[in-house]
Length: 112
Image (tube, rainbow, N blue to C red; front, side, top):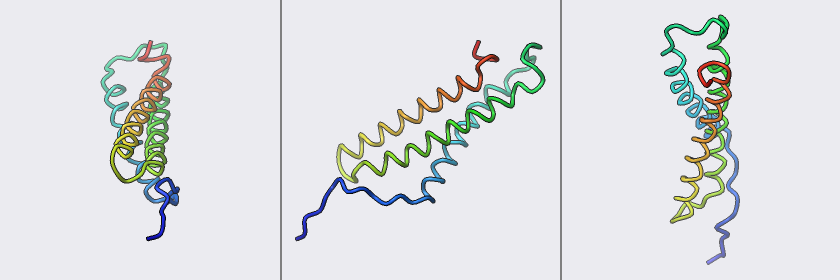
């Protein structure tokens, strides 16, 4: 039996990376849309197009977080506690990316 290296890097594939990025951006867009479209009377100092910034920045951060989950999954092996740790790191990383996107998007409007 030939020796195998459990830590050998897996090849990068663009299709799953793009899929996870789109899923991450979709979740982020749904979350930020909930906050943005729940405002009935925006403050006049926010300006006319105050919704544009959060609706662009937050999905970009979600896409980055979704792409990062794919990259972390390449590092984790396919068995045991290492896979569970890779999933946990991916979820926590996505939540942090989503939170940062919401903060950056809503800075100066709803976040104050």
